Structure formats: C-alpha cells, structure tokens
Image (cartoon, rainbow, N blue to C red; front, side, top):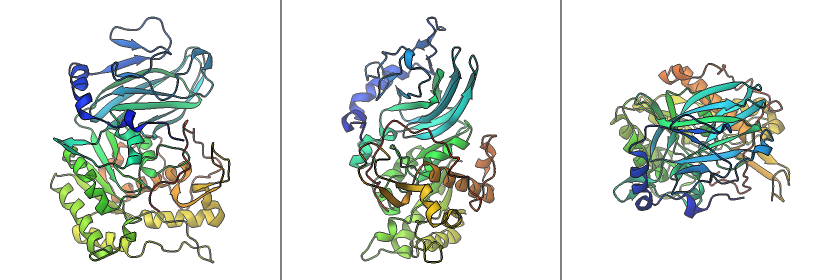
Length: 436
C-alpha cells in the first residue's frame, strides 16, 4: 500500500527555496510540546491534535491523522514533519506522560530506527538525543540526483524531516530540532536493497537499523537504493551528492555486488568495470580527506543438499577484496558473517530473517512472500550488528561513539528470532524491492 504521493514528496527547489530562507534563516532551534499542557514556555510550539502539516506552516502531523487524546496509549503511531533544508539535525525527544505509562519506539525519515520500546512509568520522563541526516535530490545549480520513480515516494528524499513515533503505548512529550554541531561525523552508506532504508513493512535493510546504535556525535546518511550497482549509483549522481556534503573525517561505506554481477557486455565484469567503479569511490572519497570502507555483499539464502550456503556472487566479493588490498581499503566481511548467520539458523530457520510470510500476513497480500535476498526487520537488525562487529574488528574510531547499551555480537550465536520485537510501521508494501 502506497502512502506518499510523488507530487507531495518530490522536492521542487524553486517552490521551497524561498520558504526555507524565510522560515529558517533566523531560527536556530524549534521546540514542540506534545504533552497536552495548556501553557508552554516562551518560544515553544504547543502541538494540538488538529495541527496538520502544510508547506505554508512548515510543521505538523503528517500522513495519518494525529492521535486524539482518547486514543493515547492505544498503540496508534504518529508522524510529525518539519520542513528543513539539507543537513544534519540534532533531535532531542522527551518521552513519557504524567497520566500514563508508555512504551515508545522512534524512527526517522524512511524508517531509520533510533529508539526501540523505551519504557516509561506513569509520571516518568526520559530524554534522548540523536542526530538525523535530511536530504533532497538537489546537488547544485541545475544538478539533481536522478532518483527512480518509486523513490519519489520515499521520505528520505522529500523537503522535510519526519519523526515517526509508535509502539505498544507511545508517549511523546517534547520534540526539539536544531542544526547539529559541526563536530558530528557523518557515516554515508552506498549500496543496494540490502543496505537501503526501506519505507514499508515487512522489508528492511541493515542501513536503517544501524543508527540505533550510535550516539548523537554520529549521523548516518543512507544513500543506498534498491537495484543499484556501483556503476548505476555513480551514474545517478548519488556519489556526487555525497561528495557535495562530504567533510574531512567523515566515512563512506560501500557494499555492492548483488546487481553488478548481472551486467553483461563488453567491458563488464568483476575485474573490469566493477573494480574500476570501486576505485572511483576510493579516489573521490580520499581526495576529500574522508575514510572509505568496503563491505562484501550479504549472502543470498541458497542452501545446498548438505545445508551449506552456496556461493551465488561469482567473482564479485573477491574483486572487492582485490581492489581493497591494492588500495589499502579496510573491509568488513558481511559475505562471510551472513553465511555463518544463515547456516546457524538452518535451512528453515533462516527464513525468519528474510521476507518469508504466508499469504494474508499483511493487508492486500493474497499470495505468500518468499524472498531469499531481502531481509525483514529481524534479519536487518542482526546484519547491522555484524557491521558494527566489523567496525570493531577494524578498530575504526566510529566504535567509540556506540551507545552504552550495545553488546557484543556473534553471527554464530544470533539473537533468537522468536524473542525479537519490532513495532511495525503503519504502512505495508507487498511488491519486492528492485534487484535480487
């Protein structure tokens, strides 16, 4: 089910540019009070149930009706959007209610996980701060990222920053958004459907889970998209958009291989155009004094008769390793870790990490879903932990900014899928992402 119209989401720079200048040139922060209090501090915007987002106002409840007071604690989620120009934003949330206990999950933009199932007692409040990256297709002048038609429906590419609050008993009291500190490190992600921020249930990728584990000193900017190869990523202007914002000390993570291996014709191949495109990433990132890391592609769920994962990526993982060795690029071995993960879960158990669901598990889903490439939230959550373990093995300084509740992870001893909890978003999509 689609919930965002392309006309509503796709940024027309000429329409919004003047609005941005008028609305934000004199504001350093905006604070919104959701508590229901009749009096708020000076400069704080009191949010009422009828406050709907519009481009004229520049903030408000978005996409679905706001929860009414009588529905508080019912598990009904909300989307709240604020129109903002491109950049990193420090977001401070206060969760809790004077009247009821709560359990709240928070995501941003295209379902990027930030907080999961935070409990608050009646009368208790908890405050959290994190940094969210917000972007549009605009690069400079008349230059834009050539996003796909289906991406025009994505919250990642629109003109506003959207916070999603849900959970079994969501309780949001305050929301403050302000420009981030210049010392924030941005982690840019380049890749395909195994990395991208998936907007719709039950699809998910590791790129949208990894923000959960970093504190406010790190911002994750996920530029991956379903169906992309290294060459198409560059051709669409995605790398160019990253380079326009990349600063010294930032990181660029690159995972390709799934779709690159399908390219045919003269000059194509793992050690030809694929290796050349990877070298382009290396040269462009290092020219800006930023750091680049390669991630070998995640395995497909393809078992042999002995219950072992079969290799389906041809020479592409080895080509990535070859370029990395030649150029001195650190490598996170997702290829190996996801093999261990799938084999540990087993032939049947591994389905619980991917989009395998019987018919009618979701609205308007008359047929079973059986996808052996694309992860569900549990699988994506586990792979995100593998990425962090890879960072730790490489001793990347980024791991100094992990939240205190992160615990070590071993793909040979994954979390039990039966105990994994995910507060589903409001919207679903039965069509598989591009690529395989």
